[in-house]
Structures are given as structure tokens and as C-alpha cells.
Amino acid sequence: MSFFKKLKEKVSGQTDSVTNKFRDGLSKTRDSFVGAMNDLVKDYRTVDEEFFEELEEILISADVGVHTVMQLIDDLKDEARTRNISDAKDIQPVISEKLAELLQKSDQETKLNMKENDLTVILFVGVNGVGKTTTIGKLAHKFKQEGKHVVMAAGDTFRAGAIEQLEVWGERVGVDVIKQQAGSDPAAVMYDAIRSAQSKKADVLLCDTAGRLQNKVNLMNELEKVKRVLTREVPDAPHEVLLVLDATTGQNAMSQAKTFGKATDVSGIVLTKLDGTAKGGIVLAIRHELDIPVKLVGLGEGMDDLQEFKAEQYVHGLFAEVLEQVEEVAED
Image (cartoon, rainbow, N blue to C red; front, side, top):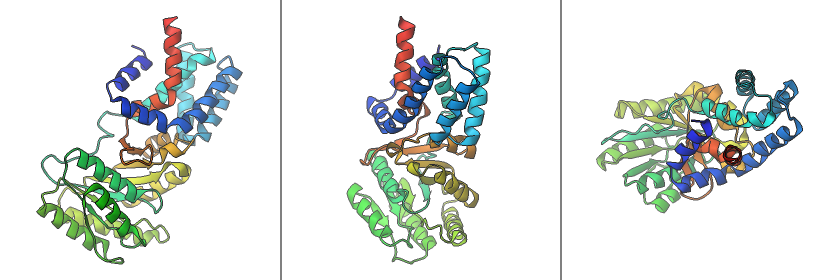
């Protein structure tokens, strides 16, 4: 069975609404990236060294990342030789196939680590302005829709308005927010939140944290202290440490991921504003170069637009038109 047939089968097994969210949310990236690839195929009828050099530039401009691009180009050259591909249009399906292979190493790695019949603690980290608090609110809504009892902890006691912002989300989605005064010790907030979540027999505790990077040492020490308190109260917590990144910041998001990755054991990435960028290739750069799975993506501003990341949906969202063209050719 061809890659595209397998991809279509996987995607067809998922709801149309999710498929459409990925397709709509990736429209800017698709128009830019796939549009440039289509032009490349028209300009270069044959697959040669110049073709690969142009493709390399397109991938780098889509924020796929230099190291990832180098490996991808090498893999494509090998595949072109192995499959004896000389026509440029025949390499398009291979490109999408290789992108999918880079994105997901197992079906389980993109799923959130949830405790059965016990409290799941999820810690959110990331710089200010990436959509961290909004992401927490949307995830609280998602869990509540699934029938889970959720509590949120306002651990960003440093940024003006952060506590109030989380409280607004708490009211919107009907979830309790545990807080202290601005300037309080975040670790003390986490202690209160754990105790409150346990007493309420909550299923999930979502923990916000400060995101200032002006003084990295203080911030990272603070995160370590927060983690120690969580682990002391719930021995295997936090069950997830999710780093929230803004997709529109491109390579800057990569440098943030490296900084936080050194300070805390990041288990997954939440990529916000993926619908707002033409450079959605950053998903590939993060997955390949940092070896951290993308677990959630923001594909719009609505309450239901935070989606579990699915590699096949991402690739389908980018290459749906190419897939359709391949099927038409096959049928002819």
C-alpha cells in the first residue's frame, strides 16, 4: 500500500472536524510551502542537483531548520536514486512521506501522560506572550468536556495580570483557580493547589508558571523549586512538563526550547498560533533537532481550537492537494 493510501486511511479514521481544523489551520503554511514546491516542480522537470538546492532553500525558508533540512535532502537524494526517480513531480509524494517519518517515531509519543483514577499534574513553562495562560484555559475546557474534574494553579505570580487572566479562564470554563497574592512564592501556590486538588478529588491539576527570561538563573531556579514541591507532594509528578512556544516566532522558539530544555525535563511541546504562520515547518525542526514531541497545537482562537497533535493530520493538512493529484493520476 502506498504512503498516501495509508495516510488517507489514518486520517479518514479521525473526525472530519479535526481534519478540517488541521487543513484550515495550516492554510498559510500550505499556500507558502506547497505553492513554492509546485513552482519548483514546474521550473525543474528533472530531479538534479540544482533542484535539490532550490528545495533546500524552500524548506529552510519554511523554518524546517538547517540540520533537519540537510538530513531530509540527503534522504531524498537516496530515495531518488533507489526508486530511480528522475521526474520532478514524482518526488513530491516522497517529500511528504519523509516529513511524516521525521515527525513521529511512535503513535504513543504525542499522547499526554494521564494517570488513571488518580491526580494528573501538568506543569506549563514558557516565556511571556506565547499564549501559555490561554493554552491552560483551553486545555481545562477540553478536559472538562471529557468529563474530568480540573483545577488550575496560578503560579505566575510575577507578571502583572497573570493571576486575573487565569481567573477569567476559570470563570469561562467553570474550573477552580488556586491563587495567592501577586509576588507570592510560586512554590507555595503549587503546594496549596496540590492540597486543594487532592481534597476535591480532582482528576487534573494544570499549573501555570512565570515566563520572564530577563533573569534566566532566577526563573530556572524557581521552576526547579516548583517541580520539587510537586514531586514531594505527588511522588511521580509532574506527569507532563509542557513547553509552550509561539509558532510565529520561528527559530526564536527553537532557542527558547533549548533554554528551557536545559533547566527542566520538558516532556512535550505545545505550539500555539500555528494557524497564524506561513512557516509551520518549525514543527519538524523542534521534533527532529530537539527530540521533543509536539503534543498539542493551537489552530485558531476558539475554545475548541487546541488540538492533540497528529503527524498524519499535519502532513495531510499540508499536502492534501498533492494527495488528490496523486490519486487522480493513479486512477487515470
